[in-house]
Image 1 (tube, rainbow, N blue to C red):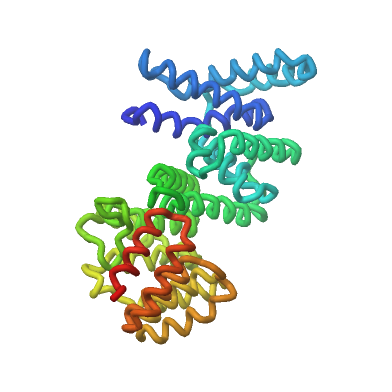
Image 2 (spheres, rainbow, N blue to C red):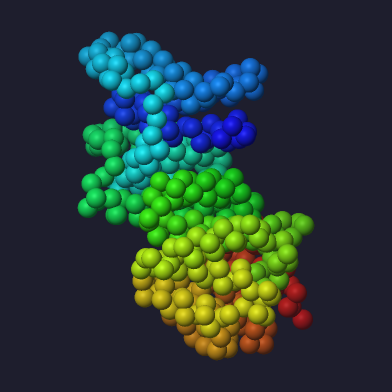
Length: 402
C-alpha cells in the first residue's frame, strides 16, 4: 500500500475509516461527512508535507476530531457525546477491520435504496469519489447528486440499521445487490453514454471494489465471477476505440492491444471458481468473455460454445439483452436469417433500443440486404445516447450507401 499514489491510497483507506467511525459512533451519515472532511484535509496536506507514517490512523484521528467537534457543537446531541466518549475508550485508536468495508458496502447497497442512490452512495462512501466527481460521471449537476446522496443517507439513518453484516439468511440477497451495483458501475464506465466512448475511471473503480469484495469473500463464486467478467471485458479497452475515439467492433480489433495480464487473471479466477461452485450468471458471462479473449482471431472464435453458454445464461435469467446477444451468436453459428428471426421476438421487449437496431443492421449486412442494413444503422444512430457510437453508426450507413 505504501507505493500507492495519494489519491489511490485515500480511496483505499476511505471506506475503512468510514467503517471505523460508523462502528464506533453509530451514525453512518455523520461519519461519512467527517471522513469526507478528513479526505479534503489530506489532499491539501499530504502533497505538501508528505504522507504520514500511519495514513489510516491519521485519517481516523482527523475524522474523529471533526465528528466530535460536530457533536459538541450541537447541544441536542450532548447525550450522544457521552456515549461516543465511552465507546472510544473501548476501541483502540486506529483499529480497523477489512470487515468494516464489507459492512459498509452492504449498508450502501441496502434494498431500501433506489439503484441510482445505491450507486452514488457506494461511489462516495466506499469508492472515495467526491460528489463533484460522481456528478460528472453521471452527467447531472453537483447539487442534484448531493441531494441524491443526502436522501440516501437520511433513508439509511431512518432505517436504524445496525452497523454489522446481515444475518446469513439475508446475506446472500444483500450480496446480490452489492454485486449488481458494482456491475452497473462498471458498465457505466465501460459503455458511457455521452461524448466519451468509455469512462475508464469508473470501470477502474468498479474493478477495485470487486477485487476488494473477492478478497473479503474468497469462497463466493459469483463475486469472483463478477471480477473475472470485469477483467476479461476491460482487457479490450485499448482496442475498443480508434485514433478518433470512435468504436471499433470486436471482430475488427487489434488483439495484440488486449491486456494479456488482465485476461490471464480473469481466466485464472474462473479456473479456480467454476469447479467448486454451481455457476451463476456472472461466472457464465465471464466464461463467454473468456472464449472471446482466448480466440487468436475473430475467425477462430468458438461461436458454438458461446451460443451454448448464452443458452445457459438465458435459462438463468429471462433478460432481453441476453436474448439479443444470443441472437448474434445464433447468426454467427447458423447464419444471419436465424439470428434475425430471434431478434424479431424482441421488438416489444426492447422498443426504440439502439442496440437492437444496431444488431439487426449488422445481421442484415451479413445477409447482403444492404438497404435494410442502411435503414437500421441510421435508426440505431438516431437512438443511441453515445456521441461516438452515433458517429460510427452514421459512417457505417454512409459506407454502405450506393
